[in-house]
Length: 363
View 1 (cartoon, rainbow, N blue to C red):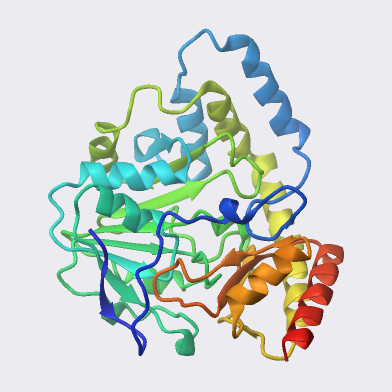
View 2 (spheres, rainbow, N blue to C red; view 1 turned 90 degrees about the horizontal axis):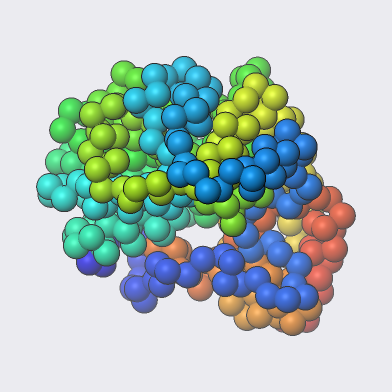
């Protein structure tokens, strides 16, 4: 069932298409700024274990070693890890397993699959719509006290806002399942923090907490489908009961094991540091363009832009060979929003030059 807004900006917007995703924007001959997957060669420590699994595909997958590796990374027992076929499967498991939920709330704008999965399972979803004027920051008081399922992204797609961990943790309470989508947590940095500032992945003291993680973004594994859930063992057991047998393939399990290694974690942190530099470069270039406003304080691998006539500009960019993500399919946004992936400085310079020409021609 469609989400009902608890708090909404002025004006009535059409119901967004929750099934629209950035990959639809990409086409042959287009330079991809629409999909938030890192574009880089696969490192040998990941490519070699993946290739080795091709000789062992006659055997059914055994998730135990990968689950143990992920658990060790997050300092949890293996019973507090559930491997999934991409983070998106986690939303489906939650929606299907938690049939007794009475008042599910999704905090928007955010990735649309949590609400889509709930609606497909027959839940009546309510939306808390964060305000652009406030930088899409979360006020926990906006979430109804009797909501027994709350879903939020951190950092949030598409706004690129990184909420303080304490703010997210304030949503946890007995009798409530709190789902935090941390698909992009490994893209974030902060001075003096060893890695993943504001992540709740290691928290075991918060009642009802479920943290969703993805391995597809930083390591370019969108086609492999691998992610996982972290949470209390009894809650994950409920989700596992509705998961298909052997849901995660042998190659995906090998990827999970490799990406949980200390070498992988160190590489992630180096990539996140480089990403911060590239993001600052993109923000500096965008700041020179009249009529373009960046939402909030971007902290991840993408930025959200408010541009009058954004859909017309998106199509003009497409004609010039560039794919960006439309924003009006996210609840809480409208026709003047675009999401742009952070790429290397050369790509950013080429893109912003074309965008500047389009904006000037439209004046």
